[in-house]
Length: 251
Ligand SMILES: Nc1ncnc2c1ncn2[C@@H]1O[C@H](COP(=O)(O)OP(=O)(O)OP(=O)(O)O)[C@@H](O)[C@H]1O
Image 1: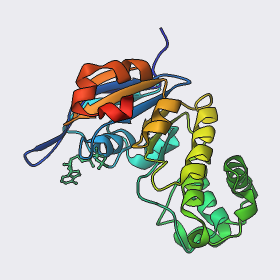
Image 2: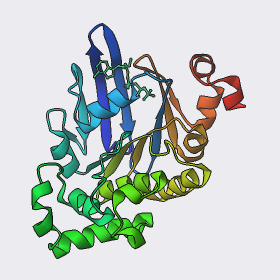
Image 3: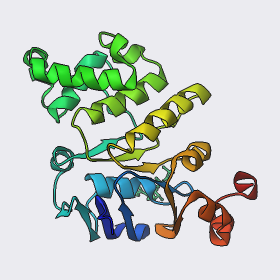
């Protein structure tokens, strides 16, 4: 049997009386896009934060490439090859596109800001950043101030930033959010190709993208996974139809 790259084993997280994740177990296999869907407030972002670091689980373990990473910081998980894109932009808006990508390649943020000038003279880092920009189609915008990018371009830049660390797996929180039809299509095509190099755990509300891309879909409702399966299995699942997908969405 194929070993999962990422194995989430019984994760729990409560915020006061609210059980945001309630014993979530799932795997991410090499080469796949595993989409995680569910209504607003189901616990998807909390789960992603527990996987990538940032939210410490009350119980449960996160295994990445056979290693227990539950106690590792977000940065250590990123350095270990777990790439992440955020729901809310983590880009430095006043920096150029290339500078953001170089910060990504450095694997750190914030505190490194004051060292940015010397870092921009590091040829290897800059080359790594440029290669990532090339892959997402932003090479021509390297010198552009990030604030001047369109929303869709910023989303692609976030993916490029994550790519600079050459991740072995991705967790992505709503990469399609706010993209127009053409932006979504472009991102869908990009993610479709990316899965061969690094599997993707994809949290996404855009059902067209989810059903077009996902090898497997898990449905999270009130912090619990109520179903996992292929797009066809999920469409046909009566529990999912009742709990989440409107009949019109699955027709
Ligand atoms: N830091 C926090 N403190 C208190 N409650 C929180 C915190 N983070 C999340 N919650 C609550 O936990 C529940 C799950 O939230 P979460 O953001 O994980 O859901 P989600 O499925 O990602 O929702 P959406 O699709 O709207 O992004 C929600 O009721 C939310 O209000």
